[in-house]
Amino acid sequence: MTIIIEQPGIIEDGEKKVQNNEKELVLDGGFAMPHANAFGHNFRDYDAQSARQEGVENFYRTNHIYQTYDFVKKMREEYGKLNKVEMSIWECCELLNEVVDESDPDLDEPQIEHLLQTAEAIRKDYPNEDWLHLTALIHDLGKVLNLPSFGELPQWAVVGDTFPVGCAFDESIVHHKYFKENPDSTNPAYNTKYGVYSEGCGLDDVMMSWGHDDYMYLVAKGNKTTLPSAGLFIIRFHSFYALHRSGAYKHLMNEEDGQNLKWLQIFNKYDLYSKSKVRIDVEKVKPYYLSLIDKYFPAKLRW
Ligand SMILES: O[C@H]1[C@H](O)[C@@H](O)[C@H](O)[C@@H](O)[C@H]1O
Ligand SMILES: [Fe+2]
Ligand SMILES: [Fe+2]
Image 1 (cartoon, rainbow, N blue to C red):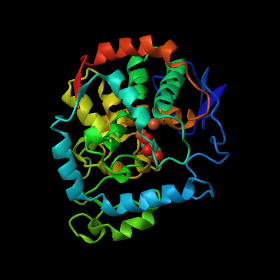
Image 2 (image 1 turned 60 degrees about the vertical axis):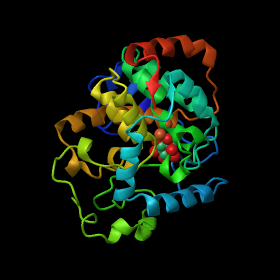
Image 3 (image 1 turned 30 degrees about the vertical axis):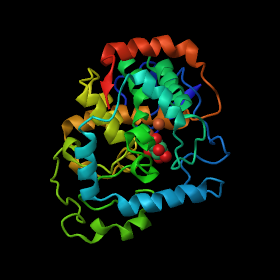
């Protein structure tokens, strides 16, 4: 079974890699990258006529109208306090099962399945990178923002692809047309290529639309995780498809971002293409993940 990575030369650290020609890198021993999602459509086809299409498009309309620079600033300040809940990482994994993601055309399984499917798939191909297994397990935990004890934020402020605010919205962002009604689109401080940023300023300084990625990043950092910077980068930017899939906004990256982006692009294959109906036996893999949580996080975290 193989996973084909379209971008040549992006992997330096993956195990079992084979350079089979100049255009492709093939990782042996992984899951087969499926051609269709569980509903018989291509992955991330936002125009395919399916039962989910209308809901997903509506989701992005609201998301694009309300995610503004000021909104993100307020949310980062509020949620950066980490004063909502105290619990362990595993408790949060279980809590996540109560969240339904309205933005996702490819998935209607309980979220814990998605976490474990991603983590187990990446573990098979990168057995020695335990930080990557744990990163996969926790990357979507921020979706608890949708639950009452976390402020019950609406879906548009929790899930979906993310994008920078404070500079122009790139055309490659899904359902870009809905940004027309976002007040930042007509604000000259925010609607130019660089906006409030500068060339090579580094993504650390870039404010992203608010949701589960940035929240989980703040939680991990605020609780002093020992995950490497690539793990934190994956958590914060895994929904930033305009960057990791379309190559937009590279003018804001610095050198470290360039290194971390390679790992994010590896991670994304597993995040996206492991979504399936094949269930993981939670009890069987739980001890392994508990040991990783223990290695990289305190027993209880502030959320
Ligand atoms: O709909 C999905 C889902 O919300 C994922 O968790 C997110 O990471 C993706 O970027 C998004 O497209
Ligand atoms: Fe996500
Ligand atoms: Fe995910």
